[in-house]
Image (cartoon, rainbow, N blue to C red; front, side, top):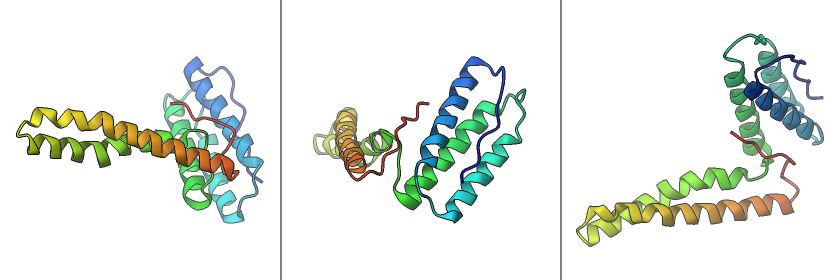
Length: 151
């Protein structure tokens, strides 16, 4: 069983939003059957987060780091992801993997490196399309958590 994050009171508004989101993530994860080794790793991360005091200015950062590591573990080990996980990931990958090389090729072929920037929106579109397709597939296969992680 996944451990519960400790109850916190009177957090700053922004930190409270991150903490509420983290609690919702844990509730969604609890609905899934997870291997015991993964449950142990998640519980260790929650326990480390529980050690951070409410007054610590680093609490918001620790919540984000812990949440990110847990989501990454679930995606890596079980391919279970939150809503729009792949779209957000492929957004940046599309620009760097597809957009920059396409823009560079266009700029070099036309001998005008000012055209480098034209590849970025094309790569962004390709990345968004690929990510949306992967998110849809995850939803159809029941591998999507009912939560969207907001930064």
